[in-house]
Image (cartoon, rainbow, N blue to C red):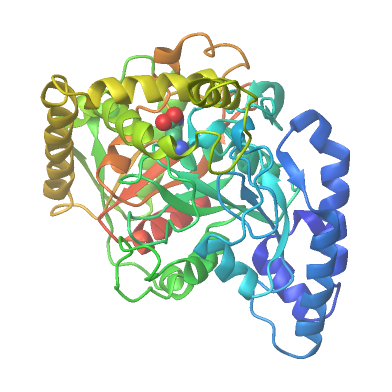
Length: 475
Ligand code: GLN
């Protein structure tokens, strides 16, 4: 048995029944990382020694009968998420030497249950990108075709799960960064509702859109992780106090007749790949045959979502990234005066895309342009959200392609920021509206590249998107 290939559910059962130890699964993952990371580049940091120590501790907990389903199961975390005692660079040189003194709340909750941290996943720097080519530690290669991107920004996490270098990973999604790489690499990725999971310790990109969620091999594993990750956190005032649903139980409950909405705008996008469209439409037909009610709906403001996103996100970015100036922490460039110190630290520490966002955001927020850009974008954001509110009075979930195309070639879009931004078109509307959205594998192209479908749910209704996701996987 290849232990690194197990799901959380299988690993937990094997550990409980003493078929193998946590040290053995951890070693299996570390061996896989050693074998494949040099070509895939999914990890920036691997913490072999501490992982094996944590695995030993987990084995002791299991022997003492104190295990939960996450105890002793090895996982990886996107490098833009803080991990106590483990270097967290966000894939930018400005944080090359940063070792957080604390865990992000979601990571702390998993570690408190005896989860074994294997290391930190490569990503686009501070989450900026859709291909993982904006990492200052090199691009991630898609395990299904090494010449192609893994998606972004949580591309290292998706590749690590797809290649079984870890049992599961924790990613971050502002405008698709969990769902798009999940789709490109053929795994399951959940963006929870805004406010469901604490953002404390997630390096902020756009605080009003950032979320953190599970990237797994199965829907059940995503549900299981959400039970630990989710819920109110006094350290993040935007987390909601609602009780956390028993997601795994909800998954098993047979659903009443589910009404699925098909937003026509997502199928009429310029540049949508015919194979992606066909795979998505086939799944919808099969769902209908399996008893779901399917109806076409319209979200007319969707067409403005990408433009709105690329004003609001850089605006929040320009403010959030201001803290990284070479003075307080992170890498400091040598300089003769204060101005050069800021300028050189930021010049050397950020990749081009991050600088581009800071410049766009600073411009959009500046006096004279604020009303024309930032304020206008916020107004349209409200309209986009209202579109969804209206639709969720009539349907339980929406189904769309997860991405307009399958994984593209490394280098294909990296010189054309606008083409790269358009890769987010299917992911962004749910992000702007704070809704849960889920990407599950739906098939493969003729050349063998994975294709995902996206399920968008009403606010705080992760249970529904996971239920529909599970149905799709069973078709
Ligand atoms: N591609 C999106 C962007 O570059 C995704 C960001 C994210 O979700 N972190 O903004």
